Image (cartoon, rainbow over all chains, first blue to last red; front, top):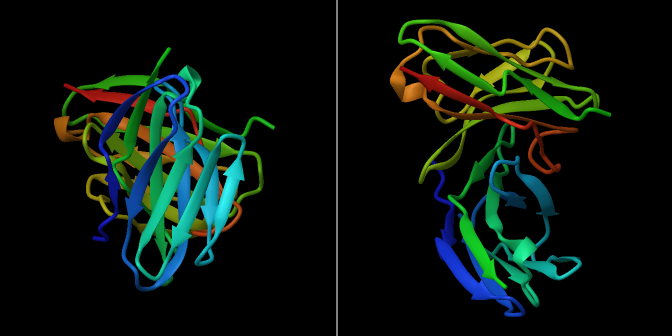
Amino acid sequence: ILNVEQSPQSLHVQEGDSTNFTCSFPSSNFYALHWYRWETAKSPEALFVMTLNGDEKKKGRISATLNTKEGYSYLYIKGSQPEDSATYLCAFVMNSGYSTLTFGKGTMLLVSP
Amino acid sequence: NAGVTQTPKFQVLKTGQSMTLQCAQDMNHEYMSWYRQDPGMGLRLIHYSVGAGITDQGEVPNGYNVSRSTTEDFPLRLLSAAPSQTSVYFCASSQREGGDTQYFGPGTRLTVL
């Protein structure tokens, strides 16, 4: 079983704060790293799929970086808004056989107005 | 496009009963998978399929059966329900495995008494 760790487990910030989360994964046999946003009572929605070391992706106020050599990815949210409140999941894909996703347990973000 | 659909949305079973969770996608995706989501555990892969006629086990396959007779459909069968199978079940699909964005269905909340 692959070890995919996310930190912190939860985070409570004020509207306008910028924040970041970490996803740690095995540094060998890397294939891809996914980020998903998961609102309560809904299904996970894709943010980014990252495949290359040094990748940086951006969608609006959310961005992500990837370091495959040391096995971590950061997700940044600039100027958090209450609608950013959700659980953010990362998923690691190993380069072997049928490349399945192994999810971390997520970081739960609450943004207060 | 309806995307990924799942039925039913809610189900209550008694221990020992069997049932099938339905999943369908209309995006002509080759890769489909089933996850279960339990508090504090994140999303765990039950079974997956890389195309019609091809299925394989994920991290937690015991007590579940799958088949893939068409590209569109990927049902999950509970052979003899147990309280430990109380969970929220998500079906997901993608164009190919691993490196592609996963599209999730709305989920099925199952309670086994």
